[in-house]
Length: 412
Image 1 (tube, rainbow, N blue to C red):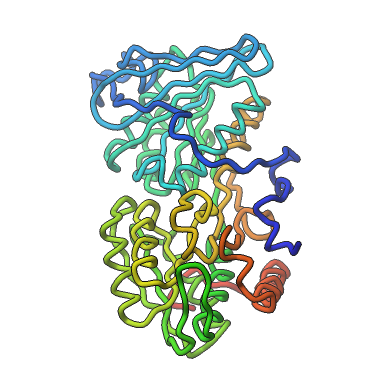
Image 2 (cartoon, rainbow, N blue to C red; image 1 turned 120 degrees about the horizontal axis):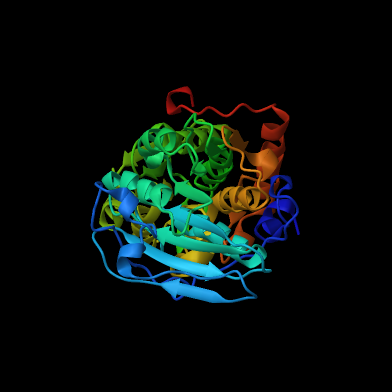
């Protein structure tokens, strides 16, 4: 089995300190999420002693043997859950998770972050509490509630997604004794460990695949290409420097495969707008695109729906979406995986070992297995081996520096 066919089953990247990886399909029963903003809101946060789930009269307990505890209740806006895992005994570390808007169950970015927490719960003695903000304005509330909490006193607050940057830039210096980690952006504070990814590198590979397949007659699962298409599509969530990196890499990969193929782009403006994603992708398929790549969180579900309706193809993001949203596996050619789980796990491991990497920026690219292409669970075996071999060559050329992938679509 080739490197690219086997990537979803490989052992951890070198960055990951040798812990064996596992592939999970998310269970909706693994966490019970509840509404949970402290009644005091943004005022009197110090009174929210148990963090975001405290107002719901719930708590997670652990630290002895393999015990588990769950707490839930009701409060204002957003979602939270407490969970405890006894681990291997000794004093447990308390972890707070603030997810990106769009929430869990996206089969993508947030679920991948939660996977890192799941893995850490299996390997370490930790208690966790999770929150799902419904809008950007709630990030500060949750960050500050975790930081102000004294029971428990959180050892680490994980902030998932670049939209938390501005809130964390205000929160972190005001809670200088609190450890934070941030995914997808950088806050230059000594108590924040930052994890960034080379999304453009992984996107180049799926772009090369799309640019090659759309110029050929190809049929697999529920989709097909016409062989004479001159465009493919990209659907983004919120337009930003980060999501433009996906677009830039994808466009560069398409152009590497064929100068005759153009990329149609549409930013929906939301990471949780399934109808908007479906509408954007449908317009692209109607314009002749055979393949659409999304970097749009749960909005991407609409892209998959449109692909099935048009009997065309789509490309997933962040996780192997042919597995995590398997009802669309018959149109998902591949996914650009982004190991957010590695970042979450590693940051928790560092805190457990009293080695928080505050002030650091940890970039993860192809060379670190932080991003990669994973071929679809159902369709991957149908993609010609010659195309996979060419992509594998490009992958190594990027690592070696022979191919420079732009981060700005204007340079693609």
